[in-house]
Length: 259
Image 1 (tube, rainbow, N blue to C red):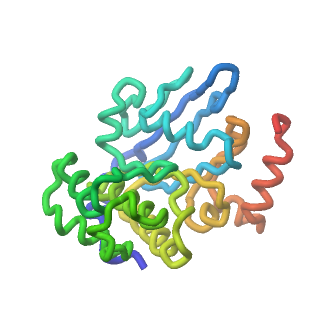
Image 2: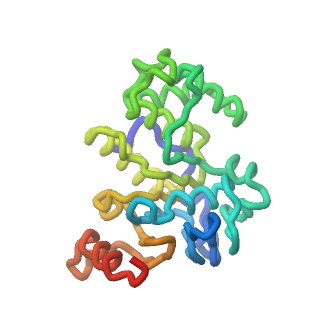
């Protein structure tokens, strides 16, 4: 159940005449030498949407997120994230959004609580103890407050990285494999939170290769393989036909002429 850490914004606070595009990518491309990791991908994600980018390992999902968050520049094409060009102003993009990277990497020399306080101070947040306390409670790791990050389990580090991404209540979050290190109980907590976050007006772009997650919580999906976008559309279009996402995904990927 989505309780205990509700973001303060409400959906009608951002209502506009036309739905705002929070992410717009046009012909986005990334080459590493002769290898094309992302190949001319165009997609958009609207405000209040939970969009899932699906693909096998090595398909280009993480590279896509790294370009959208300004961590690496594209080789070609362009993107706008909350109206900001991440290639030209990566600091402003990362200031405005929440990010959970593929690899959880909180500073090893800080405790869990010190790290969240550090993030809060960098972001000039108020009520720091209250904000941090809500996340320790929601993700049930308050007993690890004083443990050094280097001594945390992978699952607890992922909880910590999830908390830092949403500590400032961003309008948009980009998440790479959000549930992979979490147990089934905590996965349910996080999925319920994400549903509530989007219901209240937030926007989520997540990448995953766990199809059950996408089918359960995403509004729209994109399927990427060998760096190319094979499909983009609402999940309900599949479920309305009685198809499961798994069979649709496997047919797409196996039938890809570039496979």
